[in-house]
Image (tube, rainbow, N blue to C red; front, side, top):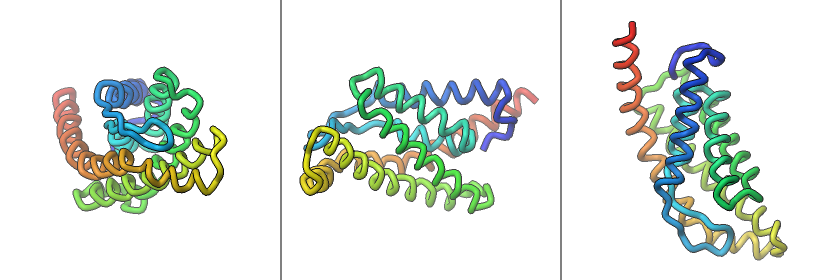
Length: 186
């Protein structure tokens, strides 16, 4: 985690930066995947949201994720279900934060890999539940919603695998960059 007051100007700027990166990580790179429920696509928004939590902490990281992912949904044709996206990223942010705390904020490679794998796996579960709710919102029966949501998971699984791989890689790269910037300014 970056060490500064969560209400400081630096924290606000970093939260805004991560918010923009999350939004752009979806807007610039998204590959639609056919599905029975919803309109899923492959993107890097979840990866960047998890990085935001790791670097900024629960409050500011979750805020960046909620605004970045939720904002994308609202502005790009997913407004009716944006609240589900915001709820999903909040759940993932809380779990990532709790895991980091359980590891006593030790960001060893092993711990970050474990966090990334758990976050990716959790995202599969939250997306499955979200898909069921989306299917129910359009009038599908519960049994049909469960089955259709299961067959709509390929994009989520791909996103989750990329999260498990990309979070550790990007975390340590960004950590080096942030450390280098701090050394120059001290």
